[in-house]
Length: 614
Ligand SMILES: [Zn+2]
Image 1 (cartoon, helix red, strand yellow):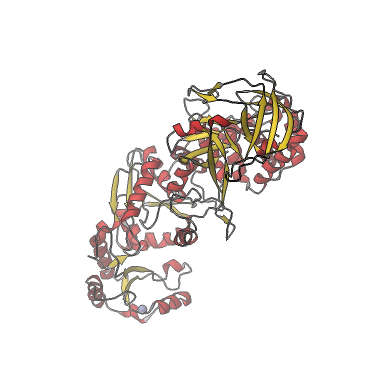
Image 2: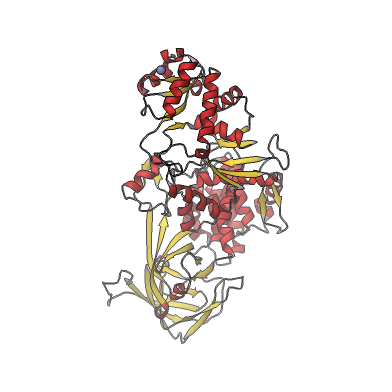
């Protein structure tokens, strides 16, 4: 059966609403009967029976989503207006209620149905005085998780007319690389996150040494020369080591020795006097400084070999930078006590700490442990591979930075650990692409159709069904191609419409006896048909086509989730081969288009596009 995005969205809305009302379960019989009741909207020829497999497929993808994601997805599709339920509030009931719900957290813009999401107010925020910071470590390429943090940091700075600082947290010379500083900045530029100030933690290393000395003088720190194994064991068993007895004078001079490079890695660390018996293990005399030798720091070279830990550098930098509201992901929750304890003992001003959940998609992890080996082993070639959650990867796939921002804001700053569905991001993206993307034809696994009595040399096709994006002239002969997915559903005597061309009746379906085996796109079957005029009827299926004289070999890469649970998904890239209109060669690389009845795609090279989403 022939379906479109509007139909898919309609099914989704009905299924999601059903689940939201009934205990998070989707009852397929209810969905089918609702679809039946609105089928007139979709065209009189719709036979619900034919649609059942497709309805099942669409709803099965939604079943496993947690309730809050079902709700978010429902909201986003409702806002898209790309469904048949617009005038059927009575059938689905809650279109109005949903709008009311949304008004609590979102504000309508003057554009009308375009809804803007707004973050909740910040405690203790004073207009003009809010300072936030985005503190990435330049040890990798920025990904969707970074985008969430950066967007939230910036949105709050703007909301209160304050300031956003981009601070490279570069305190490990063995891991930081200059290319990562640039990649992070490029990622922010793409997201249109504009920091008011850019700095490096490594700029302040001498200042941070001074605060280390102050802690020592106040007897809040000591040099520990135990081996890493002993330190680990003692921490686990809540036992203090003998080093805690070192005098302040002795510790100060040992610390100077550490700064001057007298010690090698793991020979000495500076530890905080926390509480070795604390139930919060983060407080068990954590490391403040460690020796790192042999690395060449991209900003300060090999000038320093004693480096502060994140636990020590972050509170000091936040405080000195004037940060009023410091956001970090929930995994640091246990370290909050340490953060405040250090600032208390140094009599430094304390920012507010706000946590949010880390962002990643199901099946597309952001952790280096799961991604880096794929690159190192050459399984995935580059960091901009569209299967990756890197900003470069999302960009190459055709995701718009505005969609990422809207998506992040729609999630708001929740602590829930569930991974949102990629579909929610896609639905924001789709809405934004809809008015930008030209519509073109692509036929996957082409099948020949000989049309008797066509007598049309060229047709003009609009590049967008409703907006003025110009027209293209397409040369047509008597031979055209349609997709095998459509062809296998045809029987002799069927009539169907070739979009923007004519109606045809199927006369016969034969094996292609003159198949050119050297061409992978050469069809296996040949269909003979006759021209049945041009009268548009809602009864007929409408399909896309490509003419023989106006086509080029084309392939589309469809990225799928990298992992199934914990296992690498071997089949995470589908390649659809077929023919596209030769008009595509006139479009610039990087253009996003919509292949009718296939989906949005971004042109990657002359003969390849990447599937963005349906
Ligand atoms: Zn020790």
